[in-house]
Length: 255
Image (cartoon, rainbow, N blue to C red; front, side, top):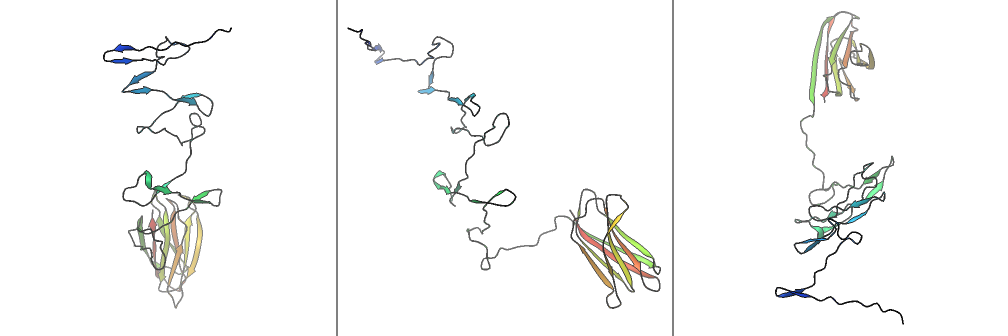
């Protein structure tokens, strides 16, 4: 007859007014080693959760101050090569948003240049779309830059002679929305030039205009932004048969 494996019962002993069975959970390989017994305090067994990371290295799981398992969505070539990712969940509009109101999933669409564009709607405070029956109000505000209005008068410019009206763009700014008004009582030629670089001393012609007997005034508009430190130049040439004054204003915004 084969040997019979039997177990012995655990017998409790009196401990004050109670009879208790005390059990310790210890490391099976070295039960007598330091820090090998599970700790209990506040009626809680203190357990450290360990697992393998994406490189099969043993790591200890961490919790937030609210007890949630932490996730890291920031890529790091050393510490987080495979970051966590999760979708966004939006709350119903509610005076007291909570987990129970988290019901809405944002949407997106594949756009150009290999990007994914999240759908965004501009609505009023009640969530209604703007249209011809519910227009979006728009108000004029102060300009974000310094408004420039540089006036110059060239006095008694001789026949066929020229005079330059220069404006140097301030440092650390760029000049936008360039406009020029020019005028002469007689015939004149006006050439708008932009310096090719800071202190370059050479200029590119942007445009040329002539006044006439019926219209003594000309206007220029130049849309591209002009970089810091360059000179905006208006070359004013007297085409009349005698000396005359030439007038001009260089206007725009330095941002």
